[in-house]
Image 1 (cartoon, rainbow, N blue to C red):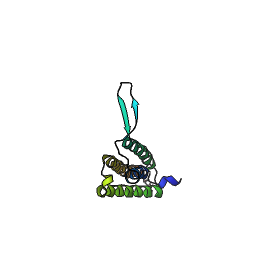
Image 2 (image 1 turned 180 degrees about the horizontal axis):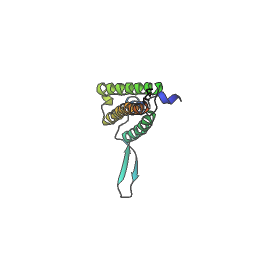
Image 3 (image 1 turned 60 degrees about the vertical axis):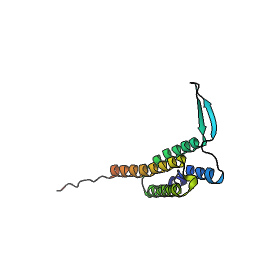
Image 4 (image 1 turned 120 degrees about the horizontal axis):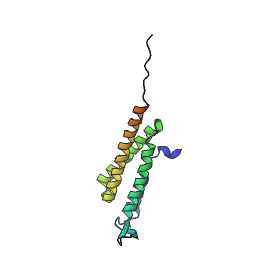
Length: 135
């Protein structure tokens, strides 16, 4: 499984960077709207779609965090690097200074913290010491 060691949250960050740098799209642009039963109108913007995609990828990242072994360690390190690069981008580049990117950055932070926390918790459960009976 090749994608097990690949940090999935890099995908929504790449989508954001394509939309911000290569094809500038206003983040509040309404992509579609849905008429609700209440009579209200739910407007779905491009930033909403990117955040929802990122949430799905975060779900799979947390599931991946339950694995243990050398591949899981490498996955945590890569997720940490993705968070660091996203933080640097957020602080230094003007097109990344938006609420949408800030939410993506928080999702990356949750991925890093949850990944290490889940790994530590499962490692504690796997650790057992058997007591040798003295004769």
